Image (spheres, rainbow, N blue to C red):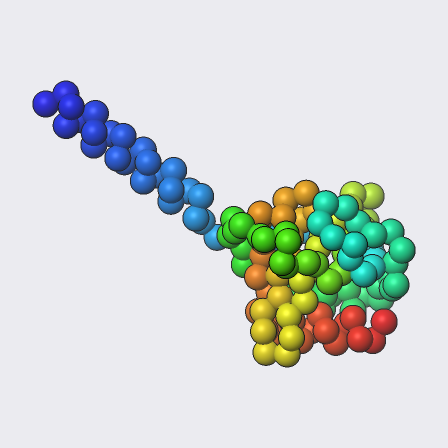
Length: 141
């Protein structure tokens, strides 16, 4: 009887841990965004500080932010040898904090992926519609 109880307890603990790991995660913004700096990525792990554009216009920031906030995330193994980020993004908040992101920009009709620098296994998928918004913002910079 003790073995059965122990087995069931272990089974439910394992099930609970598995369920917690597969939960959807959302990108969160720390405060109101004051600017977004964009650079061509040099790869995972850091931000290329040779920015090609800085967005500080409220309407453009809002469109960019909406695409990020609607992104859905799961812990996912990224193959850093085959999937390279296209852009590095530095988000500056009005409270002085920053977020560094890597962006793998999809083609028209495809999803894109964004991940926090240093946390590349926690990718967030951006919808094809969000990809179009990001492409439009990036093309107009």
